[in-house]
Amino acid sequence: MPGDETHNSSEEVDVESAEAGEWDRIARMMREMPRPVAPDSLYDGLMARISEERVQQDASASFGSTVRRPVRGWLAPVGAAAFGWLVAVSTEASLFERFERVLASALGTASDGVAHVAVQGDRLLYVLKQVGFASSGKALFTGPASLAGLSPVAEQLLLACVWGGIGWGVTVATLAVSRKLFAQT
Amino acid sequence: MEAGEGELLRAAQSGDDDAFGRLIRPCIDPAYRLAVRMLDDRTEAEDAVQDALYKAWQALPRFRGDAKFATWIYRIVWTTCVDRTRRREASLPLEVDPADANPDHDPEQHWETRETRRTVEDALRRLSLPYRTALTLFYIEDLSIRDIAAIVGLPLSTVKTHLLRARNALRNELSATDVSEGRGSRHARG
Image (cartoon, rainbow over all chains, first blue to last red; front, side, top):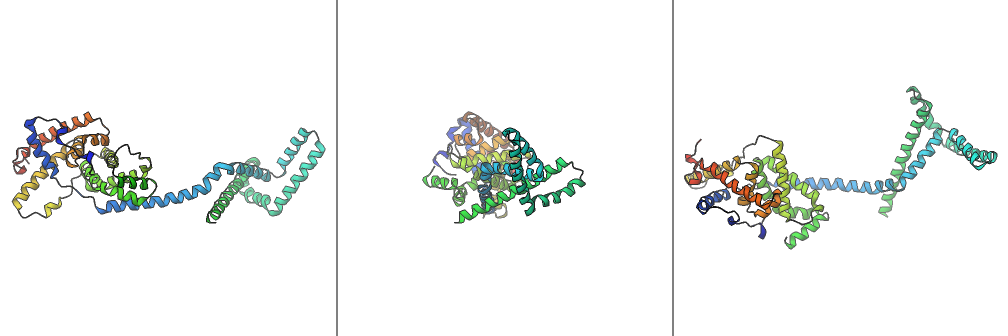
């Protein structure tokens, strides 16, 4: 590694003049020692390693740009909302009934409120059951959950978590695909 | 830092791996020599230098140019070798010098030179790591004390002290084999 500042001189180390001659001889012998040369494989291996790492980094960056930012941003609230919705679906009418009561007492218009919310809830459940979400979900997990001896509450939580996970995965995948499509255009 | 090196460095820092390759190429042999002297094993030295240069590539965006690039590389190689020497206790001998297999036209003179050189090399190898490193960087790699201090992370005065003590230690080692008196190691003790 040549360079002006790298050049040293023996004067940098103070020595007795009587020893200088002897030391010069030793120093010369040291400089005459074999100077190993790095094999080509060292450089080639290094560059191959860097190239491999670069490919991994690029792949990771691509994935991160399509997934991480949405997850940090608005995907979390959306996911939480989806989770709540799925809990409602998995527990079918029970949450709607509770919501009806809360809303009714809050508004002070029990009969109208109950009727309105009940109608909306029934409509939603009806649609969901028609497309098979709620029923298939319960059918899928009720059996194993019952076999495992889970309580009804745990069963519902399990169902909600599974559906929440599926919803999250679908959302992330959709975002990734859409970002790719937008990037290409 | 030379202009060309500066441009290469900026390109490498912005992700140009070819630029990094060209930047690192002149550093490889000196780095390898340091690693061989420190580790006393060419295969391990090769691994260590590759590891060190890979670390340098990873850390390149954080290199601010406070030190010379070559010094920075030396520093990483030195640190890597120190870590490796701490992990192992026993050292392995160097491979056979290629000159041994290809003696020159004067076998007697070659034998003398080779033996003397070998004796110095053996004496150097027996020194402690800090002394061996100081002598290698100063006398073999021709670096300044300031650069050595930057590489090993010690004050200038400590490096000077190491050098003086290393020289005395090496001289003592050699005096036992009479090399420093100019008689060659043919008369050395077994």
